[in-house]
Length: 410
View (cartoon, rainbow, N blue to C red):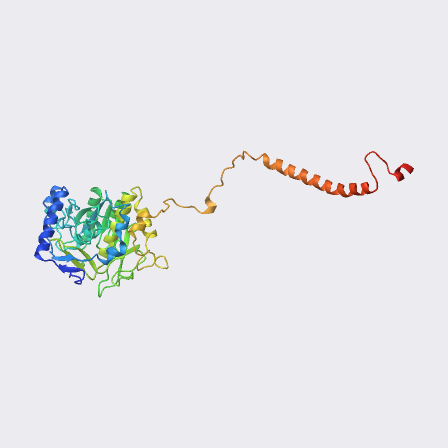
């Protein structure tokens, strides 16, 4: 098992005993205000604990500012399945947010709510952590709900041939439970069972978000699956300056990016928070899953492909528009929800039909005006010609009906 070391003292600080008691009291009050399910009431306590409190908003939340999108969408009605190491339901940030899940590993009685390594709990907190807990931390979509699905007993890199099939079964189960978004902060090797499960989920309009993968020292880079499958939103990591995190695997399959360094999230036990300075694309995927939940709640009729396109088109794009490091750039929750984007395909101009001819109710006036102008012009010319003739005749004494002397003599 891997423990996540704490971050700097400016962000995390040791909780005194009174703070721990206050956190416990807040958790009890919160449980009283939000009617828990029986599973939530009997949620197991397991996994690493932390007494570190949060003293300032993590940089990732300051950068993404999800609260700017909340007047339009908070993720209400959306269920996000977290296929990971399990999710603790006892932390104040996740109290009332975690549904009954399933453990595909060695703890079936825990219903996915036991996180022995702390990874899945941090992922869930980033996606749908509650707001208003008195701590400067919340999830991207605080009104969404988490469906925990445990498939990882630890965080060791594994080539277990059974893992792709286990993840496939977890995806199928999550779809059957009504998940709208599935977060896959893990990587494995491709397999026919996993390929089929991904295709089935997409066919049922479920949004799949996955980590692009992290570079392993001494190993050659390889595409991360299920992120590299078509239709899955593959997420890379960026740092506080917006640059590509060196440990984040690059590839043409990378679609978008999110914070992937110096990450903070809730601990499985207690009311404290844990830090992951090295980060990883696992956490970046969680931020994108939260944004996908906001979009799904705001636009429930969009397909997974349309949601992916909306996230990509509203991201903070790199100068070239797309690259293999960060895809279309940093996810932007506010623009993803608020931007007015067309959802219909725009055909090329040559493919557009000619507009139907319409009768002009004033069409008769056009030829009449032309004839009037022509007659008027002719009369004007005649008058201009006649005027000097008349003037000359008057000088010679011409009167209407009277002949001149020369005419009379003739």
